[in-house]
Image 1: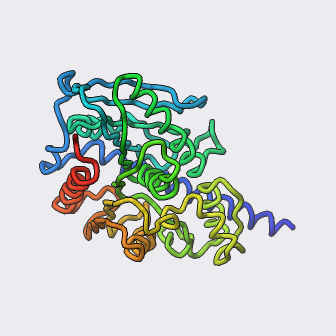
Image 2: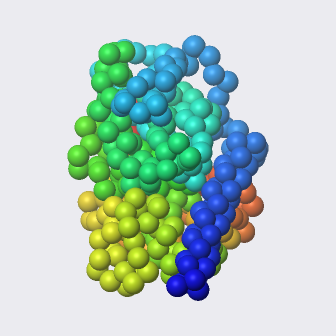
Image 3: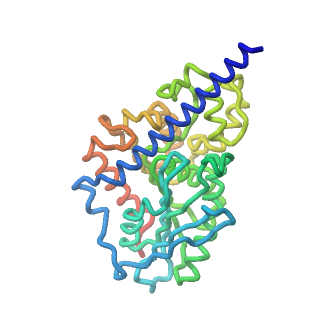
Length: 325
């Protein structure tokens, strides 16, 4: 009995260490993205003023304290319809804020889109039950509110793209692949970077999860918001338990055009996980651009030309599937 208790305590501690390492790594990469801009990326930012647009902050979309969004609307409000681009913030599902992406949102608005940054309930000491699944459902519920608020301001939204980085990339993929059929605004495309789309222990070896199935079950159970046990791995029951947060599982022949970027040396969103997304896109003949950065980690920091290519492809896809009218 005592030995079993000690073993259980060790496993529980290992789960906590895995979660902690996951969070710290995500936060570190997010900070890098906020503090560094390569010269080639400067054209994807603007000197914001009221000549470009107006920002409406902290608009509620639900009852939770974090259920708020910021809306960036272009100064030209004379068009019959506008495209919406949603950008979801990073932070390891435990930290971050919509304001972190204001430069991206301002740039999107400057192109003529209505842009929205959306917050969601973070998993922390005050919200220990928050999960990737519950966060994805909050994002899903927010889009109707974004559409209504834009309409109140005189902006009719008839199409949308959704995007994000890291944790935000995962949430964006889940909306685009899992929830697009129920979207109040037709989803036309997705762009995202370094978002985890699959959860198998063997692909998460950077956290040692391939060697500790109980720790893997604990971490993935936290993410999915449901109980997962180590004996479920490799079974249909596991596939069903993890599907609600596994974006790649929702890819089919009708999935929206996609632009995505991943770093080969990513130790936060383990690079081995990307193969499932890539395979799903290819097998279903989804129009997509997959950009692999051979010298970069999670921050995509060591391949500036390829990161610039990612943004060029994003712009091309926006122009093609979300043209400004």
